[in-house]
Length: 111
Image 1 (cartoon, one colour):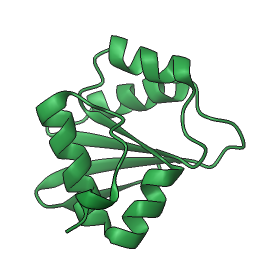
Image 2 (cartoon, helix red, strand yellow; image 1 turned 90 degrees about the vertical axis):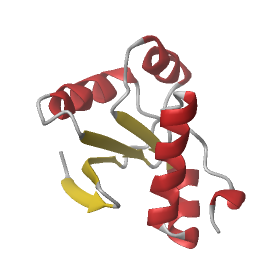
Image 3 (cartoon, helix red, strand yellow; image 1 turned 30 degrees about the vertical axis):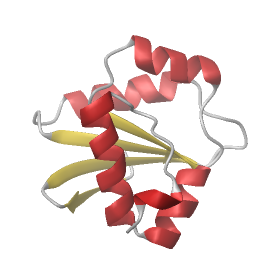
């Protein structure tokens, strides 16, 4: 775990991967176990500059990752331009409303 942030009532654990290759499912599963050991309200934010492999994304939907949100390099870039608060709100909203743990941020997510 690389840190923790507290935003808009959310308590988030942060993990960052700056690897040359996309992240496979193993680091996602390991991070989820760490998040699961925290109080139920804890949310995990896993950032990967080069994204995630397709098998990792499929497995993320097959396994219950309700408390881990996946961020790729494009998400990070948009969040840095439009604001991390707005980005986190958009990703959390999609996770709650549509069960999307890897929602891809869009320009319209930023007011």
